[in-house]
Length: 167
Figure 1: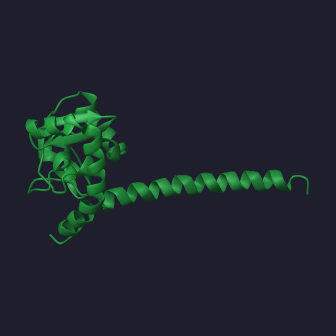
Figure 2: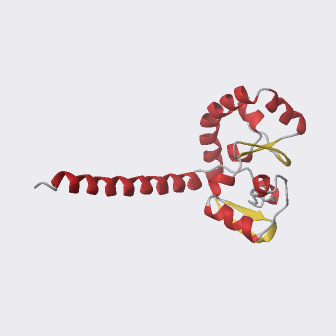
Figure 3: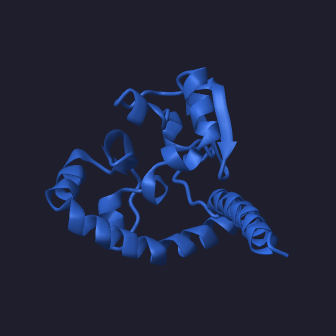
């Protein structure tokens, strides 16, 4: 009887740990299943550029077909086996924000395609821009633009998902 509170605490900790890991797993599954990714007509994400290279090499590098991963309804190309494996282990970490659409357009309530050669990485998040001019405008007031884009993305994302699912 003396050990009941201790045993209850241990069981509670184990259950809480399991639920935390399981909910993280479910959240990651939902992210992939409900992702909107700007891609080409062949379902190639971000024109075949290596999304890991933006953070790792700080450059826009074209991927190769021999290093690929299918994720979120798109095929992703990588410039190396190492980059492919990094993405496969944590795609949410490397996938571009707002599905790869231009963040300035999102902040203004519409979607623009992006140019994978024009990008910024902020706090480990990749943003692909429509043009250098749009990137400069985005950067001129990034904080406000990001707040607006996050708010608008909550509205635009479901519409894009619906459109994507009807294709």
